[in-house]
Length: 445
Ligand SMILES: Cc1ncc(COP(=O)(O)O)c(C=O)c1O
Image 1: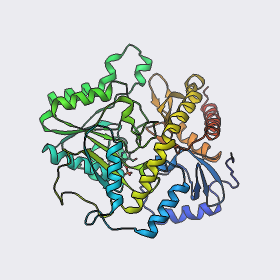
Image 2: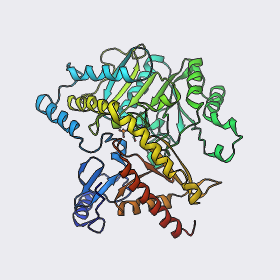
Image 3: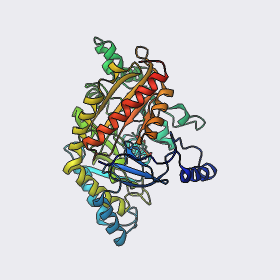
Image 4: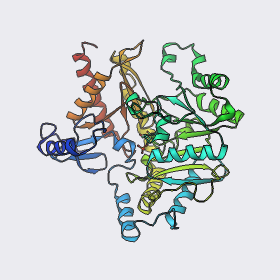
């Protein structure tokens, strides 16, 4: 395996020029953790504008599922670009749109007919799911979870409850949205007898029904089967099945946001398959087209009953993105989904003992290639340690490993699904080294 190569101080001279340009002209709302200025990517690797090479454990925020510039993906993109770049599925037909819809309907969970709406981003797919849920049920309320991230446009932002800065100054948001805690097994590890807490989220919803959100008015409950941006939290096993039973009792739609955890990342095509729970509407984006902008809102056919003209997008389901998606799904089904499960186990096996080695590490958890390492100031109170997390990200960058954060103090690992053991071994080595340095700078074990 080639090793990362850091040949300049970071950021290097060429990177600095781009950072200056960016600082003058680009929206200051983007929050970058460190100054990585990418020039080209190949497989697991990214080269910056100064010729430094990094191992990529961020995958463009879980987007380049098949790695950077996978040759088969490049081939289908090139071929499609020479054939038809745009037509607009809103006003015309083309084979790829219908073919991809057929494929997604076949692989989405649930043994019933489905229909697919296409957008360009996760947030658009959530907007479509919210509008569809309102239209179909003629109810207006939604229930979502604290810590969840569903996007930043005004509808999806009303569901998002991950970081206050994402909402601050943008209100009033959509009325009728209530949030309840996402059930988090972390305290249960400290209190093994605390079974009652496993379905804390469901109990909180039942309380809402009796107090502020009459179930007859609730259109849908929206949930990430594994919390992404909010901290890579894997819920307790009974959570999704309990939610399914609750929604069925009240005629409420269940929407799974699989924008981050879907498309093979957890070792199954959809994260909800780990709990054998089928939603009414499933939302996917990010990894679906290996880097081209595409999202899909996949619903039971009897629910997607809105009429012509009710909802559409000029660019959604662009032919090049659809071609890339069909090839991405083929590759994920053929080998990368299975690889994600196997490599995820390898990473967890080799990182799982970090909490015993470092007081700084509160928890290591995840499924497949969606793994969180939670850094804490105090393991019992679980006070997060954002400063230590930022320091780990920075040091890893300087050692040639690209990582991102999530939650308040968690490091997230979400490499492309093509990851091999030697890449994983290198990442483990860097992460251990960074933790050692940060812990000793913090005066801790
Ligand atoms: C679970 C989840 N839903 C929705 C979104 C929004 O996706 P996008 O940034 O493509 O709008 C994200 C983005 O991080 C996400 O992780």
